[in-house]
Structure formats: structure tokens, C-alpha cells
Length: 507
Image (cartoon, one colour):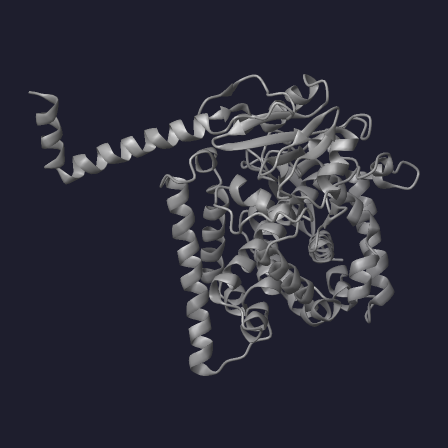
């Protein structure tokens, strides 16, 4: 059979023709991305193992090990590699950290768009000012309004009620144990939906669980293959679109029901509808707020309880602080501590729990993992120093462990130790931007107040309701929480699962 006969047979089979066409298109794509991603000579040195097609696979497999090795083997501390068609430059050290967080020429949303497995939403700006895109401005305006003091004051009773309801559910668990990375994580999810989503979701356990499921599907879709080959319909990309479509339909259904019944709710969804936001903007905002408010806050709220369970001194300090603050405002000083907390006003929740705040702070330091991203949107080279530059359209990354796990800043950096932030130590003040947990410079965390508020409420009510110890799934005591996997890409739940064995407190 000749080649032409084979081709004729292929064209007669639609399925086979589609397969061959897809293979050819994939081959063309691979060749294009491989040969079109030349690294400029004035960029930092290229890391070893920067392979064709995949780039430096170590970045995806063991991110901190990769970053640390590349940093330590670069004469300037900066280095270059590829992820599929994308060129990335890693920055490190004090100068690199300042450049990364201070430069107006490095775009925030543009950096995260591609590196989290989706296409960029807007064209890069070339005015040299690094102006954020319309989506970023929209998100900033909406979150700023929703997290104003008057919104906190109005929502506080409902937030406390949600926490109390969850505490009661934990009490009623016949096992006498709880996995905080499920139970506490879900409290944070519900409180976040209260502030940035829709009341219907927060009030309906089934809908709340569905929303969490879709959110986690989108979170897990940012895979290496989705970044390397963004045009291919990979399983991760298909799941992303599926979950996004389900969320869209869910919110759209709520909106249609409100319109049909002329319902008005005092929530974020109603505010955005009244502001004239289109549906896709509403979905993008809710997802963005959940990513900002759940992954770190939900995981860290659980970690704090695990750390306290194995740190009697800090548990005692926290409980003393909770008692003192509750007694200051309690209308009935003889009531159980968990009921005295009902009278604590917003101002006290925000300012009178410094010990709890230090506990959270060091949990964030340990668990805020992975790398932050930016993109050079200036249209010109950005000077790094030593004659090296960040070329236009290049992605930039900084590993948070570069400072958070620096033993010269935080001695014994793998150990949880809230005393690091006491005035006599002030380890986080040793270097400029020595603590990145709440954002710095041009990129502060807009949700910091809310994250601290919900953390204080959850921790206070939990400590007022239970004595607890850290155990495994069989109820056997654990001396200390497992070491955090520093090669993780973000805050994550521990493996194996951790549990808290509970005893109800009467006072």
C-alpha cells in the first residue's frame, strides 16, 4: 500500500482524521513553543535542567528545593527558566524582594493569569506604569466596600451565630473528635461566603458544599500541563470549565429567583447586582475573593488549633487573653466563657487579641508556601543589577520561604513559635518586608482585617468550648503536628490527617 493510499484511508475515517490532525497540530505547537522562547543574553543565567518543551520540571515537582538550588548556584541570586512557552525569572534576597513587591512595572493579575493555568484576560500595558487591568480595579472597588467597618459591624452577629452553630455540630459528633482541616475549614468557607457571596449559599448546607466542591475543582486545575500547554483540552482545563460553568449556573439561578420574586438581600451579590455588574464579573469576583480568603485563612485557622493542642504554654496564654477580654464586656460575668464572648464588640474582636494574632502570624509564616508571581508589563527591560534585566513580557517569581525560612531572620525556622513577634524579639522586623503574610508595599492584603476577625472569633469560641489534644484517626495522642511540606505550592491540609480529641468545657 502506497503512502497516498494510506492518506486516502485516513481521510475516509473522520475519527482517525481528527486524531491525526490533532497530533499534527500538537507537534506544530511543541515546535513553535520550543524554538520561539529564546532567553535573552542579558537575562539572569539559565538553570540547569531547563529541558525543551517542559522547561525546568523541578519547579513543579519540588518548588522550594528547585528555587533554593537555583538561587544558591547563581552569582547574582536571580535565575531564568521556562515553563512551556513562558519564560520565568526568579528573584531572591533583599534587593530582589524589594523589586518584586515595589515595582510598578510588574503586573500582579497578569502574572497570575497564565501561571495558574488560564489565559491572560487583558493585553499588557506599555506605559511603563504597570497599570492593573480592569478586573483588578473592579475587584479592589468591590472588596473595599464589602470589608468596610460598617459591613463588619452589621455582619458580626451573623458571623458569630455561624461559628456557634458549627461549634454545636462539632460537640454533637459522636466520635468526640474533629478534623479541623474539614470542620474549621468549612467554618471559614461559610463566613467568607457571608461576606463576599450570597446569603442563599451560606444558609443552604447542600448548596454550600456544592460551591466548595466547584471552588476546589478550579483550585486543583492549575496543573503543570495546563500552564505548559494552555491550548490543549487537558483534564485539568475541562474540570476548570465545568466547575466554572456550574458556579455560573448556580449564581444565575439565585439571581433569576430574586428577580422573579422581587427579593432583596443585604449581601455582596445584591450589592454587585445593584451596581450593575454583569454575571461573569460577579463570578470572577466571588472566585477571586474565595481564593484570597479561604485557602490561607481556612488552612491556618486549623493549623493554629493543632499547634495550640501541643503547646500548653501558648494555649494557656490564649485562654487567659480570651477570659480577660470576655470579662471586660460580659453582661453576666457568671455565665460560661463561651456565652460571655457574645457581648464582645467589634472593636475588641479586632484589637484585643494580640496573643491569638501572634499564633496566627507564625502559622502563616510556616504555611504560606510556594511562589508569588508578577509579569513585566512595561514593554521594556527592568534592571535587576549586575547588568541583568527582566525582559518585557517575562514572568517573575519570588519564593516566600526565601525570607520566611531564612535562619538569619527566623532562628530555627521550621519551629512554630509565636514569641518571634514579641517586642523583645521582633524577628519579623530584622529585614525590610521580613514578613509577607499580609502583603507588603504595593500589594497589601485587602482582606487582612476580615481574616484576623474570623480567626479571633473561631479561636476564642473553640477554646471557650473545648479542652482538646492532637490525635491520629484512631484517637492516639500525637506529640506535635507534622512538619509542613515546604515544597508545597500553597497552604495545604496535612498528610496524614490530624484530629482533635475534645472534652467540653463547662466554664
